[in-house]
Image (cartoon, rainbow, N blue to C red):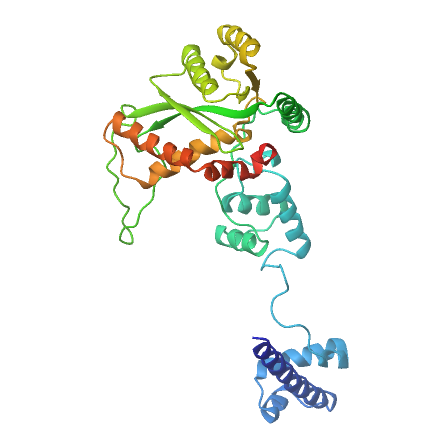
Amino acid sequence: MARKTVIVHNLKEAKAEVRNSKREKAYEYYSAGKTAYRASKELKLNEKTVYVWYEAFRKNGAEAIEEKPRGPKKRTGAALSPKQFERLEKAVKEKTPDQMKFDFALWSSKAIQEYVIRSMGVEICRRTARRYMRKLGFTYKSPIRRSRAQNQAQVTKWLNEEYPRIKRKARRHGATIMWADETANLAGAEKRAGYSPKGEAPILRAPDQRRIRCSSISAVSNKGDLEFMFFKGGIDTNTFIEFCERLIGTKDKPIYMIVDNLNVHRSKALNSWAEAQNKLNGFCIFYLPSYSPELNPDEYLNRDVKAHLAEKSIPDSAESLQKAVSSHLMMRKADRESVKRLFHKPEVKYAA
């Protein structure tokens, strides 16, 4: 590969020397007062090329003999200057379109087009906008969702102060920290894709999603523990307490459970029960910052289940749906390493 690169480089240098030699001869013709037409014929060059050289000689003299870098300038397009490219790159990296008073949530080719037109006064098409993004090293991908109501100060405090305090307390009391979350799976609701002839979309025969569903609650630890339970309808305090009691029964040590701020998790009945359990076996409940599901490792288990269902045939009953979910969760439970890998996600590495 290195040899091939050297050959190509030497070939380019040889061609550049030939071009320089021809420009020198053309300059001699120019200095002698001969016409560009005559020079082109005698030197066997394109007439337009020689006219361009003559104009350059007229403006810059002998300096125009030296060849300038060929090809387009790096990181420039047909319309934007390097400084405008830097400005565009900074805007896309540091802000969202709506923060800049554009009616777009994310940077799409349409948003880029409007930004360039309105902010720089340069007319470009959406195809050019996509080309600009490729040149700048940006790719088009699905976003990570964050709630607008999320309080970043609370998240920072959780990561830097609250969770480290929980971890120290758990170490002192020999407790197992587990993250819990509820979810509902609806038959056929997952994002799916499949091959079909060009120009034809595949047809997916799906049931009424509202009729075929199953609800579950699960909890995971960074040691590879996984427990789950199914329930009917929506979660309530009694159902949550039942799951906690099952969880307590699986361990001979205290359990520190971390959950979100769902009303059920903060009910008076649950608080009274949790206080009694704390005195009895050291059980404690802690709460994640509001609107921060990405900080809960169990959330990634729920996503894993949905990704698994998206590859399988769509269940035709609530019983078969629950069986499919249970089968996958049992497989994960038997593979502790796969549960530990849930904690490898950047958002939850703090809990690994």
